[in-house]
Every structure is written in C-alpha cells, then in structure tokens.
Image (tube, helix red, strand yellow):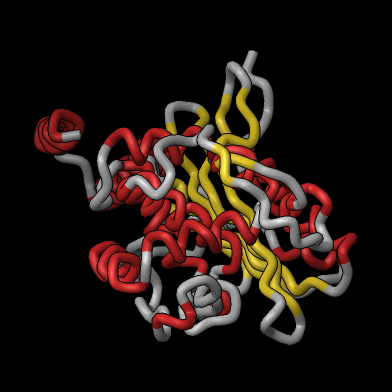
Length: 300
C-alpha cells in the first residue's frame, strides 16, 4: 500500500496535472482499498465488537424453533474465529437448573475422588422400578451417562458428600454455586437451587475442552470420552442432554461441542418441552443450526 501511495504522488509531481486528475487518483485509491479490505467482512459478529462495526449477516437460527412450533434458545461459539451465533439472547443469559447436563460435572467429581474407579465399574440397581426401562438394571458410568440414569448419579453424589461437592462447585465456579443443604445432595441439580445459564454452560465446556479445571488429566479424558455421541473421520460431536421438570413448562437441554475443520464449536440449546416426543427436537434443532454453519457434513 505504501508503494502505491508513493507511486501516485510521484506521478502527480511529474505530470503537474490539474485538480480533476487528483480526484481521479483518489478515486482509484478508494476503489483499490475496497478491493483490498473487502474480505474483512465476516458472517457473524465477533464475541467482542466495537459499536462502530457495521451490521453483518448471521444465520436465522430462530426459524428452526418456529418449524417445530416451540420456544427455546441456542448459542454457538466458534472458538477459532471468536464468533457467537445465537437465537434468543435474553434466554441464553437466564439461569435455570442444569438437570442432567450436570452429569458432566458429577462424573468429573466421582472419578476424581474415586467414588467410582473408572467408567466401567458397575453399581448395583436398587430394585426400584422407574419409568424409563433403561434405568432398571445394574450399570456403569459410561452406560449411565448415555442413558442419563438418574439413580446412578444420585448414588455418586451421595458418596461424594455435601462438603466435597460444594468444594468442587466453588473451585470451578459452576453456575450460581448453590447446592442447598446436605439433604439436597442428590437432587440440587434437578429441582434447584443450582442454576446455570446457557452462556455459562459454554464457558464450562470451554474449560473442560482446554483441561482448565481442577481435575486430573485422566479424569478429564475419561469424561470427554464418555461424552462422545458421534465420531466420523471428519468430526467428533460430544454432548449431554437434560430434561428439567421442576419448571412450567418443562425445559430440555442439549449442551456440548463439535470438533471439525481444526476448530471447536461449543453449543447450548434449551427448549420448552410439552410431551415425550419433544425429546429428540432439542438435538435436531442443534444439528440444523450447526449445519447452517456448514458443519456436520462429510469433507471430501
């Protein structure tokens, strides 16, 4: 650019042209600038932007909720490009109980302090028949995470104990850090007082991915492994669902992150749940939103 400016000034000195020629030169320079810097425009706003930055186009993620006739929210963070894509920002900043998404944290604590030695050690079913058939048998951490087996994780929380659980919650700074009293040790994530926003879920998942949590690398690696939902040669999708029944309406969660294109995309989705058939909708909306960004596709 400096060479171009110098060339223009030399040209004007040699030719001694009149003022119109100066305007022509300036106009050419302006056109060149647009060509050179036009590629700086992006498809979504960076997470931190100046108020002077021009408006840019973003995917209409809200249309996926409209297609299913449901209220909800989604936030996706593109870590490489520091961009946030979201629908319903106010809801993304509103705290609710994490429900079964807390199984990520609960697994970390249980493995770290040894209440289960690994992901395949079996706990014996208590014989109480529950509404979800997959819960009604002996199981291990890996299968309990997949089936979202509530009784299994309640046992882990009781074994961890109130004091140690509160210590880890404080160290991590998880949500509002409130787990109630000792009597709430096996339900504080299901019916409050623990609350977390979708955007806080993103921050927690970032720290998990980066290994920036007060847990050993072995513990973190095991939890990352049991979180895998899909794995292909082109991408790996990790996540955890949750279904909060202590609110009206019920709220479904789906949180996790996608590794693709040498990048990581963190996501947190919430959805008002009206019937059991809504369970896969929170996942489908998330998948459609990621596909809007050109993701979850095979790379040739």
